[in-house]
Image (cartoon, rainbow over all chains, first blue to last red; front, side):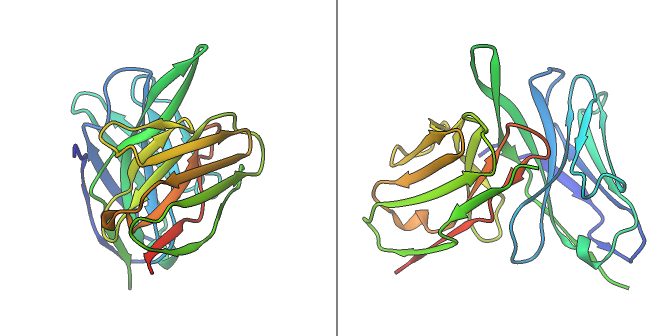
Length: 126
Length: 107
């Protein structure tokens, strides 16, 4: 199965900034969005945000918006996630995932996350 | 935000059983509903997109249905490799939201 490659620091101290990178998430097409999702230990999936690979426009989860930045480096075809001022509540496995329009019906595009990264475990501890 | 509620939260079944998981959205999301399967220690895997479309490579025993607010995922004849946690996700609007998950366990 095709998998995105992601990397970044896995151990942070409280108040530090989490920085992760995801390789080859999409192409220069408006049909691709690169997402970040996280999963605290033993819990469900939480969407962090997305970036359109062509335009660079972003959408963020309101619960994290004040601390999150997602950016795209088109020259290297990579996307990055920065999350500032981390606390223990930010400890989780972080995934990048590509969302693309898999079907279009009457000009409406239906998106789904069809390719995921392997996940990066982030621990926050003093 | 659109809330996604799955039921049941956990389910015990046997190989060969037919099982159905439901997902309800807090408002209409048309057919913008996806289903994912996650096994321990692994990333989620897309099974069904746009409510009823089978992702390439996914066995045909998986079917999805529904529109508006009510959706379901059915596995027609459980195989050993199907025991996992299943999540629904709406792609209708941001923030994208997931159901809380349904853990499918062996009886």
